[in-house]
Amino acid sequence: MSSPSARPSNGPISGDRFGALFAAAVDPIVLIDREGRITGFNLAAEQVFGWREADVLGERVSILMPGPYRDEHDGYMSRYLGTGQRRIIGIGREVVARRRDGSTFPIDLSVGEFVSGAEHGFVGILRDITARKAQEAELRRTTEELRLIFEQTPTALALLDAEGRIVDVNRACESLLGRDAEALRGRHHGDLLADADRAVVEGALSEVIAGRGETWSRDVQYLRGDGRPLPALLHAGVARDVEGRPLLAICEIVDRSQLFEATREAEDLRTRLAHVARIGTLGEMVSGIAHEVNQPLTAIANYANAARRFVLAGDSDPAELAGILDKIAAQAERAGQVIRGLRNLTRRRDAVREPLDCAALIAEVARLVEFELRARGWRLLTRIDGPLPPVYGDGVQIQQVLLNLIRNGIEAMAEAAQGDAIEVQAEAVDGGNVEIRVRDRGPGLRREVEDHLFEPFFTTKAQGMGLGLSICKSLMRAHDGDLRYQPGRDGGAEFIMRLPAAMNREEVRDA
Ligand code: ADP
Image (cartoon, rainbow, N blue to C red; front, side, top):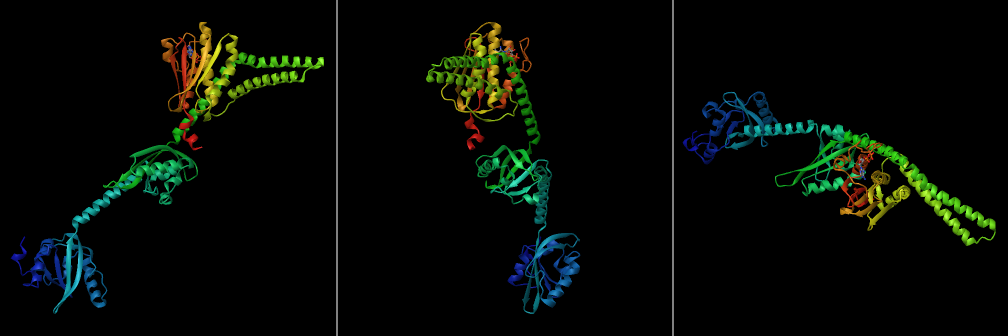
């Protein structure tokens, strides 16, 4: 490359300072007269275009342009000169230039008008923007690729701004929610959630956006466009810029409706099975229960006869008579309680979840098994250690488990002709959960029995179904609780029911 000092006279303004600047300029500079003929072509222009200045001086500037600019250029020039209407002068724009060899390249062109003495023309300063254009094309390509990946990925995605408004959703998300992206943009993400989830999700998302926690997941319910609820797992994370400022919250929405449906069906099946098992257990207890009801009825008949005798004798003391009537009422209440408890246990109903008082549940079950134990000369020892916090669950199902464990204890002691009491003990344990222990004084479990205890159809009894304990375990698990076995301290069996505390439940806390 020849240096500007080697050719100080390059350009029409040779010899003066401007000529030197013109020659030394890094950007190509082309001067033209009012007819569009080249009057100056600096070194940088020579290098970029491949023309020598001597070759182009006096030529029309359109030789530096490819079609269609080439043909339009003369028109622009004469329009400007005739009307003063500017297309490019003083403004600058991106155009395409042409090298001597015919190849073209993009340039940023700024054009100015100058008058110097008698000379009146235009100066064009060019900047080769090939690299910038390539970068822009690359950026467009990667942006488009990202856009396509976002659009076409089978995972439902929603992008939110820092305030939780929807910036965009992809196609999978549109079809999962049954809503148009167009209608969703700008709306608050919380508006798409069921009432029960809205506050929790919005709170958690703002925590994640604020940088407290990287990601967050939760089972939630969205509201589809057609009004149907959509059970889904929401995973949320945040995209941040290099300085850690949050750009977007990214929400992945996983359809859980099938799982939800399967869980609902399993729950339904468990409820039905539990009901059948309950009826079975109560069927086995029917003679004991009949006695339990019969006793107060016999007492009522006896008290009524006594009262009748008093009245007929004519000298009855009203206070004494009232005392007998009170006893009749108390016995009727006792029979009523047993029947109410029975009706409760035999009713076919969906499982419910509510705060429950364990002591009351135990007392009701005790009433149902008392006769059977008493008839054998055995005792039911119930012990409630301290005030019990409420547990959360289905009272009937919990009573069913308790009843099953007590009956298993009775059967084990009867079969082995060993033991004289069953203990039921309840206490609060860690985190406000409650454990109910049912301990018998029978022979306990042999090792090989212990290993299969909770398996369905495992039984050592001639008439046994082997379903009792497996149903009990699945009922306790469905309560987020558990049922486990350990050898009792008196050699018998000890089963431990673990029930979840009501106070840990959002549903209860929020109520
Ligand atoms: P089933 O009572 O119909 O046999 P379960 O599932 O209730 O079915 O019990 C399974 C087996 O576990 C019983 O057959 C018995 O061998 C054993 N088992 C359960 N409870 C006790 C207990 N308290 N003492 C000794 N063995 C027990």
